[in-house]
Length: 252
Image (cartoon, rainbow, N blue to C red):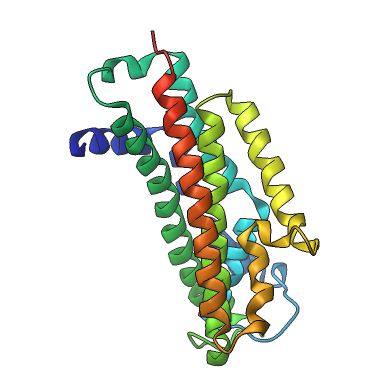
């Protein structure tokens, strides 16, 4: 499994789509350069921000624009659908298919988390290089320590949500073309965004579980445990179904 995983990760990171995703991780740095050149280009309404709050704001932005997730779905399609249709997975026929699928899972998620770490690092760099000179910047690491739990909770929920969108993309990439996979994930993303607005349906997705924080004296812990449980159920179901489908695919 280790040689297979190592080769799969190397192959994935060498592809153009993976490099595009990593380049998107530099977006906060590009923002800092733009702010230095034109200080009034970046304006925000609200309270002053420390580096911690600024990085959180950047994470929310990258989640809302959805582009990094779409590129990750493209990576999944290149790793699965394209290799299946071109029969390049044929060369791995003597290796258990479960190991092949696991290696692809880890390489796809791996490149996304490398992007995420790079994006966070660049967010802090952008803050201390450019945003720190804005009137809204406090110049400190965190402006509101009392709100740290809420900020961490929000970021974790965004990342967990991203893993679910990517998993749906992987599920589709085993069966459908790149365009259909990206379209399907976009529809799922839109559906997940509107579901919390409905009283009956809001708990279908863990994003709606933030509303239960008023029901307990340990709000974030209670909500996080609930959401993690539901995310785990989703991931287990998707992986089990995907593994069965992958086992049945005829490569030649």
